[in-house]
Length: 303
Image 1 (tube, helix red, strand yellow):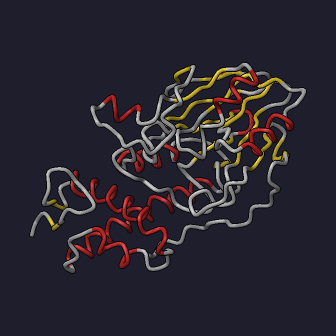
Image 2: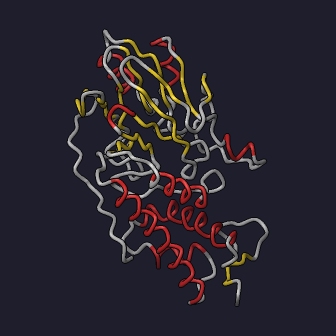
Image 3: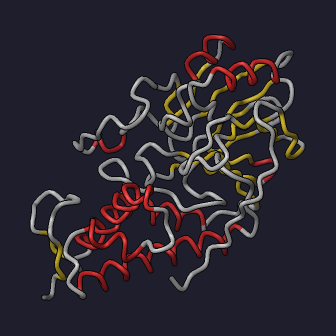
């Protein structure tokens, strides 16, 4: 891979402790580290006194109790959900009840795909349904803070970023992370949507990103351009693999992901499938099956 994304692996933190990040931004990190969550889920608090919480996190008692304790004496007026994976939204339910507030999100898991007649597997928080459904460009106003909703499908079909206008800061969820690329797993994940959502970020004037996993990202446009270039190079790798006679995704993954731990090959295969779907849609590759899958055989369309 020619493109080197400038990942940052430094992440000073203490679990269950409140960190001061900027005049309007604080964070509490959940103790759920993994190959998909880095050091854990970073739950953000926006504002002072009357605040919003972004991505309350997993159903982890320590984290839930930490948020209650850290925000004692303040009023939570909004709970904002970037998307409905298990490390982001489940804690919304008990915290909503505790704080007596409302949740805001694009919709339940797989919402956008379901609207298109595509049924997604139950790989997310199927219990979450937002009290307030938000869409692209919606504005949420609080006490001393203003958040713009930026719809960014791709990682999931209901993924939303939240822009804190007062600080030109974008809370990117799993759309853009500082320590890793995002897994795009069909049918809910969609590489074409993801690439379009990355292009959307290039049209904005955000100055800093706060992902739910990992530290902040500066020089944001160059960073997004590196993400786009990386994905295009992955597509070229797929085309090269098919040209060399690798017809199955499971055979391509070890060739493409030589620097990736084998325990993550399953997730890598899902991302290759998402990229393959984009190559099929653009007429560059053909599949042996009408429904794209990990087990199908693929060949160049012009072959």
